Amino acid sequence: MGRRRLYCRQSCRQRAYEHRTSIKGTAIPIDSVVLSADEASSLADRAFAARCAAEDVATAIRERADYSELLELTAELVSLAREAERLR
Image (cartoon, rainbow, N blue to C red; front, top):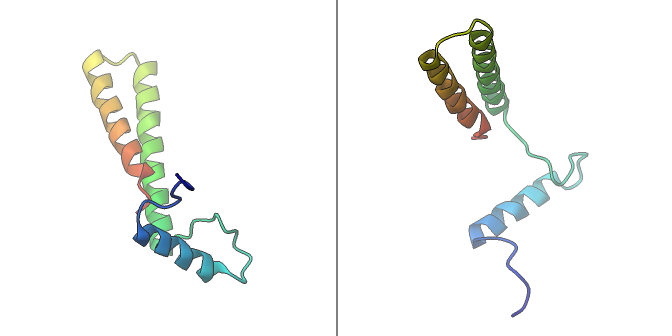
């Protein structure tokens, strides 16, 4: 009965309120994600590492690398892609 919950916990509701009030009166959109310079740099580094791993896989395929090498390269690519997804 009633409305569905918007937040999973009171702490999540509090963080959302703090986010909304911290950007009130600025040109920052309400749905934006704000990262520190270190966090943004780390995210860019992880994305770059994932792209390099993807290029390694593409090169190995072009050079007709054996199956075990491709397995190793794709496992590394998946690992780096998972790490790149992490925001914090």
